[in-house]
Length: 437
Figure 1 (tube, rainbow, N blue to C red):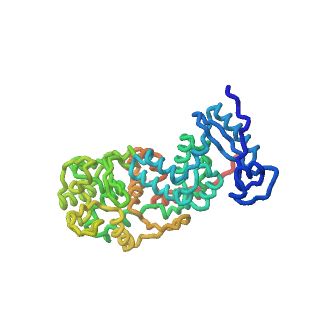
Figure 2: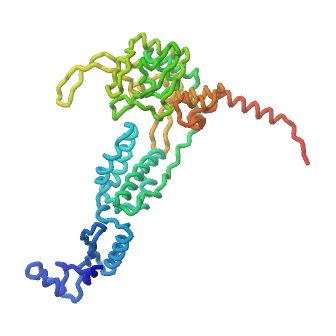
Figure 3: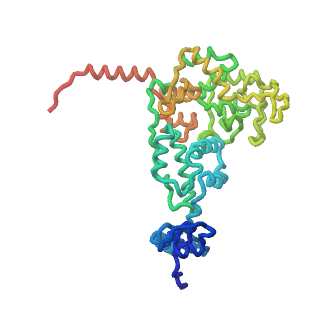
């Protein structure tokens, strides 16, 4: 075994020290006069070899600290647990630049959610080094600065992924975010804020929608399909002889750009939805208006709006746009329905119907309007549940992965249910009590 160096750690010479050795290396006539002293104040340099045999060095203010560091390094090298401290000295932003290319694959919506969460992390910790992060300051940031239960959950999920991989990449000995917790509670809402509109209320909303959009509103109400699923329905997906529609793809919004995606929200999203006579009538009206192509184009070929059943009323028209160079050119409007554009007619319709209500999230301060377009799903689930349809069948129609999720997420108490409970309570109150031994 090689003999250990007798001068390790060794004291380094300093331009600020006045001991004889430092004055000899840094003479006063060149580096300035210093007060003479007996003991050197230079730092102590600990030299060691890492697991690959490469020479490393680290400076400490005191000799005891350098000795303790050398002992810990030698012990970790022998055990195979050695981590190079310099690998953790990169900033969080630098680590993101290496980490993200290996994790940005997958669903577009998932990727965009991670990018949104990263903006929270980058703003606070982007310039900090990985090995400078501590558990307490991460927890304090999560509690005091990240607003909202959903935002905290998503941001912490991404932060944990990044720091766990930093541990696996031998940049950190442990993740300081491992035991950080979400502190914001899910927003509690009154049943009035959750219960979907009645069929009579939806009929009022349709009356105030432009006539062109009324078939779409009927289709959403009768099928309970998600917005992205309904706007992605193509002529080849509908069988009017069997009165069914196949959910095979969705339209998603990728930072303002609408695009096709093969898989719905989950694997359960691939399903067959029965069409009621009202839904069949809505589909028939749009087919007669647009005469969509019955071809089935591959998703990778692009949007192919000529196959879509539900489109914008501006589909096929032309408009002038200005490109990046400043030149104006004429383009044809594809007419793929956008959720944001539909809100321009939806909000005035629910307000004119007299059912619109502002709902403010107390944690984030965001204001939402009730009812949302998505509440059509809640209304259908509640209607089917009240009609006695089994939870499993409702799950299949709505495209949920777990049947239990349908009960607590989509079904809400109806006025009929309240009347039934009230009647039962009154009957119970009328019964006579008798003592038993």
